[in-house]
Length: 323
Image (cartoon, rainbow, N blue to C red):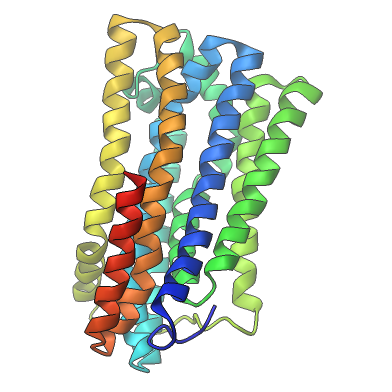
């Protein structure tokens, strides 16, 4: 990737970012689909239904990471393009702190109130033990979920989108093969799928963190001035993406509850497969926006309006083709 997005071909920049964004999103969707397929083969429809109960949790956790990552990285790129390194790194520091606080709250909530939350998401007396078994190893790494999205946003804006996608690829590949090995090879069932998922997301975080030890890393911790105002800015900038993402989790939760009330776990298992397949389509739209964001942010900071309009043109073309 060229380091300066205010120069060079917009088309080249955009489609490079689009490729890595789409690749990272696709891997996440595929390993979710593999989870459902493997658990369904081992546990039957009830296993697939249990994963459908858990699925909204990931969406909500990811949306919180998107809130802090997208909200902060927009300003990070804006300041970085203007040469204001301290202000840019203050945005990163604030996002890191905010994500840490959110992660701790989520960790406590999903550890202490797991029964209540799973019942809220639609679990009954039969599905609750299966969902808890799947969650057991994942509960140790709950903070990793918002951090994957936050770090991915900053790595993309730190001229390392390919590395962010590579980190997702590493975790996703381990999850896919780990599912097969733990579930069938070691006969661990749905617990094995949860274990593979936990190790996979930990591996993703470990690879992302290694970026901070590379020579290309420009992200640093910096003192944050006027923390309250900057937090409001962060939330405002990330709010639209956050709302659209968390809405999907809430809608899935409501569907889970209604399907369990009227149709039962077999129908929920079918719905779970449909949701995973629909995620493959959604990853296209997610990639379109993710590819445009760093280019628009950097060019906006130096008032290159024509380059912004050109980026928008390619985004609209891609979005139209997807539809």
